[in-house]
Amino acid sequence: MFRTHAYLAVRLVASLLMGNASAGIHEMPAASIAVDTLTLSGNSLPDLVAQALKNNRGIKAAEFQVKSLHSSPGHTWYLEPPQAGMEFYQAPIKSFPNPVKGQMEIDYSLQQSFPFPGKISARIDSEHKHAEMSESELEALKRKVIREVKTDYYELYLLDRRVEINRQNQALMGRLIEIARRQYEVGMGHQADILRAQTELTQLKTDSLTLAQSRKAMEGMLNAVLNRKTTQPVSVSDSIVPAAVDWSYAQVESVLESNHPNLKAMKAGIRMREAEKTMADKEYWPDFVVGGSYKDMLRMPSGTHGGDLRDYWSVMVSMNIPIAFWSLPKYQAGVVQSKANLSQAEEEYGDMRNMVFARAQEALLKVQSSQELVRISRTVQVPQAKQALESTLAAYQGGKSEFMALLDAYRMSLIAKENSETALMRLLSGQAELEEAVGLSLEEIRNKISEGAVK
Image (cartoon, rainbow, N blue to C red; front, side, top):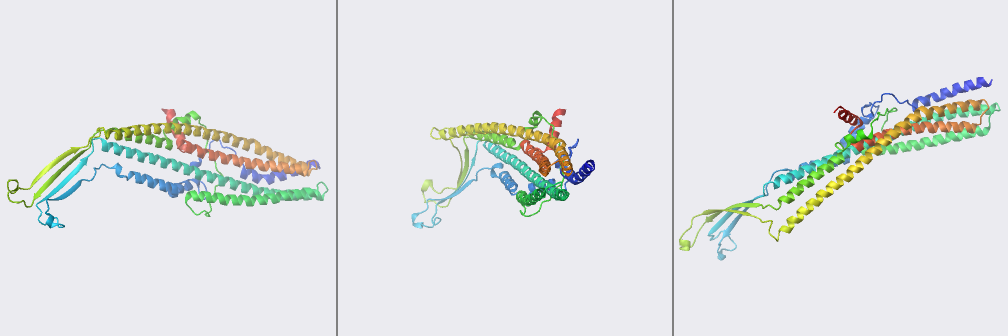
């Protein structure tokens, strides 16, 4: 009789848990598909990333900043505007305030300043490097937004899985209540067992409300990044296959420095400071002013300057003298300042490089450890917890176990399933952080590493 009960119990629990095992647990495939290229139902992750890159307010602001820098007058070759003048010369006092009444001479002049050769090109080069720096900062911002979208999406995925696990466990707990009731009716159980199971079911229902609220809040966060209404619903795939990451840190390091947008930005900043230093060095050289004037001789008193004079013109060339002892300190200070700015940019690059490499290593280690946790949870912990629950339920129905032991086994099974999905979410989030840390998608990292291996 006991064997019959045990056999039926095992079959019953197997049928009850089949849905949980198939919905919440997935075996790690031998060949994984990168989530970047995975087609998902509803609001697919690639679609959400594309929407964020197009509509995110922070990205739009940065794009306008780049446009502003590229449109800066400093990018163009130009001279300072010329100066034109007209002088009413030797106007009689009695004609005041009319300057042309009784006027003897009107002088017309035009002059233009020219910087020393090389100064304009140095200024243009500095502005170009400033714009390049802003472009790299924009790329870094895009990578940050992509990571935020993916992380929020994976958080929603985890919440959906927890909601599904909660729903399945409510159904399972309802069946356990019926089993406890039947055990009590035949004298093999206690009424307290039924009450404990009902309390557990109530807790599951309470948890489902909390999960629903958390999902709404997470939807709002994702919609904020997407520049959408916070109440807009977001559907998430019920199955995500993580990409396989099997690279060493040395391989990741080999593609890091030349591709990370923040390092690119700081390299452009160094080149900008070098151009500014070149500009400061050229300030020692003089600027020139070329001008010309035309004198319109209207009327001269008789006998003045040997009689009437004809109109005439003149040309003037001048230059400033930066090396004069009273002006030289200004330009010397400019050179010292430009050298200090260049040294500052180089040190900041070195500091940023150290932080970028450390963060990339941390992200890779997180991915590697998460991959192992996912493997252990799916192949060891979840199957063991499932077997323990089946065995304990069979023992309880056979009168050889207490209901508290059954509840403990049930809770361990619940924790194992939730930990498995949490491990998967952390793996996916870690991969998104690795992409931001390197400045490339996982597929791009793989291609870069392959190209380096071929070379």
